[in-house]
Image 1: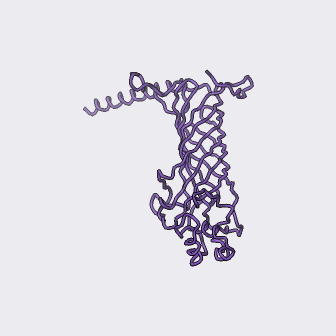
Image 2: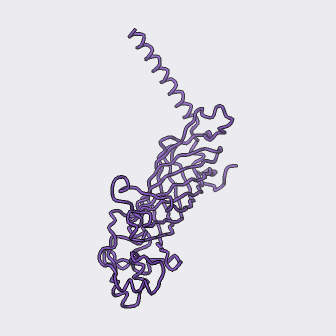
Image 3: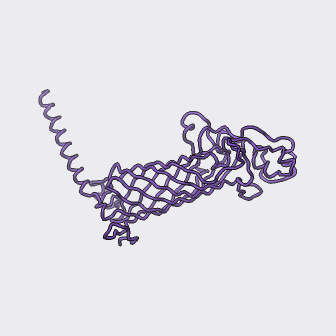
Length: 319
């Protein structure tokens, strides 16, 4: 009895090995000839999520490392170009532009009453490593009619990392207008400077999957995380309040009102001026522990470009 069970186990194991090798060989046979199809044009869009001092979640548990709220998602557009160095190693240059938004009303400290929106323009160079390589056949099927739709189904998957430069311009809603904050010197930086530079380096990392929808066209879905080397994408960093009493004495109520939003007013008025004359804070302006971070979730169309005789892209699409 034990021997029969042992033989059945061996038979099943050998059958599994044969099937696995067959599927692997079949999938390998569908890998693209990347040397002839090494260039791609990228275009698409998605949504952004902003993790900053404004709207920060309670500093405990999972929310210490990640937080989001659908009300703060904003659009982002993507264009770029990809080049293959092998069937597993690729690189792309990407231009992304859109908005980031944060609001204390959706965070752990709504009484701070900061609200910020910033336009961003990001230029990045990214390396991609394909865990599962790109396939020749499309892997999108008609789910209502194709009986063979899951045969040899392979979903190309890749990891990416790179470096980027990002321009930002934080604004807040005041007097029914989105007012740029940098010009008001709302915070004294830890190094003593009165304002921050509106360009920073960032590190993008993430994961992507690919759906082949035609012979030379695919849809890539990516989830990427950006760690920016600045804490001022939301205008709120690790510095101190400026001398707001001096600003008020000089009649600069707007600067005082934008530096400190805990007064609860969203427009200039006599009541706001009186409130600022009675109290303005000093000392540290924020207690955030992290640099600003943001995430993109995007879907892009990727078009194969024709390659010249010397291996250069011809900037012409396959038809």
